[in-house]
Structures are given as structure tokens and as C-alpha cells.
Length: 436
Ligand SMILES: [Zn+2]
Image 1: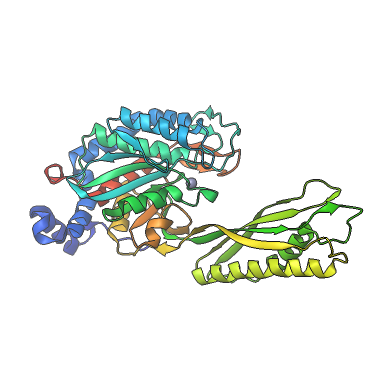
Image 2 (image 1 turned 90 degrees about the vertical axis):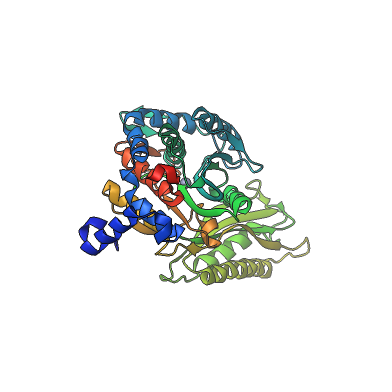
């Protein structure tokens, strides 16, 4: 890790720190540099310390909110009930919240400079369909339930941030918008974040995404991905009397076998996954349709485009093979199409960005080392548009994401909450009357 040594380690840096502390920041540096300087001395501020100290005695409150939120089902496209509960919890902290057109719940902590905004977002949705048992089982500091970590932990941290900031009467320089957003998982296609970025684009200075547990990473690189659906249709018929007519499932299987033999490079890392396959109505019918869903990811947009074309060519070839081998083509032919279900654009945070500096300063304060990661998160949207963004875990530990055995252990979660709060206020800055 290329981490900057703390100020006190070198004489030269110590001098710079003294100068920055002694003079009004504005007169010596750009607003960005002054915020960076402020980030490294944030924990010295009494109000910031009060906010940081709020977490330890209130961990059971945070855990309880996490359990409560996780037990409100939030399947894809059905986040409304959870959003309403989060709205109420924001209101309890004294931050009036709203639900926007797309279903995001937003609560604003007004800054001195309302023309600039920092978004802190945790996604509300889960991958689990309606009807999934979401009761939380608790044993000591460990909680088990689908969605408890991804993203029950993130939403609980979001509320904890708001609560701690309100408790300590923190006033940011730039406004902070706390958001529980919809549509992060699967076919939600990041619609909540897309809508937010569109609505606030002109004021938006940074986005901090809270997603899952841990403090071991910071996602600064957005992994590009596409989700595609192949559909093959035909006339359908009887398994005995219509034997020999082209069969959409046969064609799909033929095309799939071709596709999974496609070579992908190890670098730039590129992957594909056939995640769902369905079709047919009964064992003794020639099906009239068959469909397949594929997720493709790559460090390179070019590879994605290449792989998407490969899928189209393979499905077309599967249809051709099946049609050629069918000896009865009189009852109709096969049709096919490949649709784009979703696309997550790639992007990357600059290594010298103020946001990464704020995160590094927070890491340093809690004695943490984190590695840079590339992944597919809500941060993809701002990063793809050149807006500074990161995605981080919120402390504690967890596992089994997207499975019914998902778990979260809150032991040590304070460190993650402090890291997130320092990062957020590091990038928003503190109101000048509070920063002294
Ligand atoms: Zn997540």
C-alpha cells in the first residue's frame, strides 16, 4: 500500500501542518487542499470527537436497527416498505426525509455551502424474492438472515452516521445527503443511483457508498458489466407427432455450448456466467420458447463488447445448427434475439483525489490498512461520469452474501463507523465556525 506517512513523521510535513493550522486555510490553499488538511486533523475537533464517541455506547442501537431493517423484505423493485421505515428513522434523528420519484429515501444535513453536495448512500434492496424468510437470528454479536450484511449493515451504518452527526451538532461545509437507494442489485441496474446522480449532478462533489461489512478495502475502480438475455422462440408442438421440428431449447443448448467455449483473456480480467436458463412447458411438448440470462464482466469495455458480440453470434449459430438438423421445417421456424437487460459502466477514481485522501486519513486515525479494489457497485455510476466516488464496508465482519445463510458479526464495528464518518466529513469539510 502506498500510504502517506502521518504528518508527525517528518519535519518537513510537520512544518506544513503547523503553517496550515496557524493560518486561515483559505488564504494559503485552494478549498480542496484546505479540506484535505482539515481531513487529517478532524479527530482533534471536539464536535467530531463527540460524534466518534457516540458509536461505542450505542452499538446495540445500531445492531437493533440493522435487525429491524433486515426483517422488512426488500426484493428487487419492492423496496417501498423498507424505504418508509428508513424515512421514519431519519425523522427520529431530526433529519426530515423524503422519498423521491424512483423510491430513494433522502435526508439532507445542510451545509454552509448548499451549492455543493456529498452523497452518502446505502442500497435498500436485496437479491431475495418476495416470500423469503427474513427473520433475524441473533446469537451474541452474530446475526444471521438473508440480507443482514448486504446491505442491512450499510443501511444501519447510514442511520448511525446521521444520528452521530446530529448528536454532536456537526455542521458540514458542503451539504451531506444521506440516501437509502433502490435498485442496486441485479436487474435494478443501479436505477436509484442513476436517478440521484442525474438529479444532483451539477452540485455533486463526491459519493461515498456504504455496502457490506469490513474495513479491509476501498473500491475505487468500477468494474464494467453487462447483463444479457437470449430468447429463442418457435412454433412448439407435440413431442411424438411433431418430432423433427426445430426446438428452441435444442437451439439454445447448441448456442450455449458454443458460447461457453469462448476464450476470455486473464488480463484484462474478463468473466462470463450463464446464471439462469428456462423454457418449455412440459416434458412431452416441443417448447415454443427458451431463454437464457448471462452476466459478463471485464476490466475492459472492449472485451465486454467483444463478448456481447460473441453471445449474439453463438445464439445465431445455435439456431442455424438446430434449423439445419430439423427434418421437418414446414410448421414454422425459429426466431431469436439478444436483449441488453442492464449495463454498468466502468470508471476509476484518481489516485490523488481528495476523496481517497480523506479515506486514507480516516484509515490512519483508526489504525487501519485497506486495499484498493475493483468491483461493481453503486459507485460505478458517478465514477463513469468522472465524479469522485468510493464504496466501502462499514465494519464488523460478514459472509454468505446473496445466500440464505448470510451472517453479520458486529464485533469491532465501531472502527468501520468511525472510518466512514471521518471520510464523509473529511470530504464535506466542517463549517468554518466549527473547524476551529
Ligand atoms: Zn450490496
